[in-house]
Image (cartoon, rainbow, N blue to C red; front, side, top):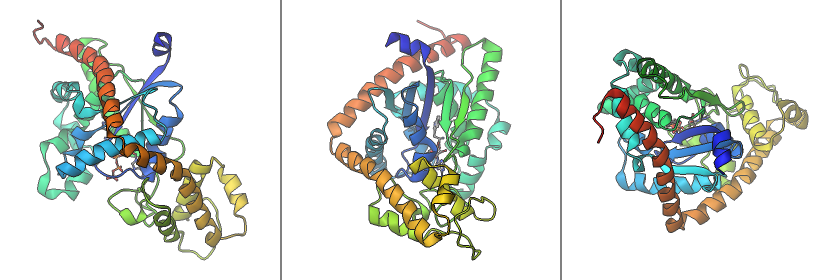
Length: 336
Ligand code: ATP
Ligand code: LTN
């Protein structure tokens, strides 16, 4: 065990419990985490501190935070092999976040696309937390000294600013932080909405969004209404520019079946969308069925989920506090 901890590279990532998990989160992030569990030492957390940059209903947030853990585990993140924890249970995130705020420039935060997006969507609540969100995210990452941060493409910019902050800090105080690399999935890095092939699949457009806990009939209905393309070709061919809707369905199909694009084109040669769309729906339904069933079972076992969070917080705090102590010492905080 001790030996593995030294040899294995470390990964860390998080998802906000701000909505129900969907196929985009699963294929873009969680599935890749689960696939790598034996090769890396993994830390995964629910970023609840981040969720309040946008107003949340407290009871809902509390409920989702526990349910999301059940869904992580059901997706294959075994708590025995991964450290699964809740961000707010490890105070070091907020503590390092404050320090790093003082090593981050206003100008670089102003360039973050997520800030620009979210502040234009929530004009009545452009709070300081929304602006400094990438700094807290940098703290989340740097506390654990990971080699890789597996995220969807939309988060790449945040991992890059984290690297900049870490390099700046290291250049003043020596090698305090490991400089992490973003790890973007080859397949599934960006899953588009089923009815909006120009925009990423997102919980804010529920009709084109397949949630992990959706019932099979809802999944079937959403795929039935999926946008294919505006031409009359009716041919299953991978062309992201001319046929983004079809390419998106093919991307989904290939990630859940493991078949290559060529195999998929061959499988549906001459068959058209009328056959293709239900086949994708069926593959997704069958892929998600055991996940949903296991998550439903786990959600009823609150004592178990609490014990996972408790154990995870202890393990995470041990690693995080070590980094935080080093940072406090370096910047000159008086130690007892
Ligand atoms: P929203 O639905 O409001 O856009 P979100 O679902 O993107 O939010 P996040 O917490 O921002 O939720 O995302 C969690 C992880 O899932 C991140 O690593 C993100 O890159 C990835 N992800 C989210 N949506 C997609 C998508 N459509 N395709 C691929 N990866 C995605
Ligand atoms: N910003 C991410 C969630 C997140 C995260 C992190 C991801 C918060 N802290 C640290 C990776 C590493 C998002 O919105 N998806």
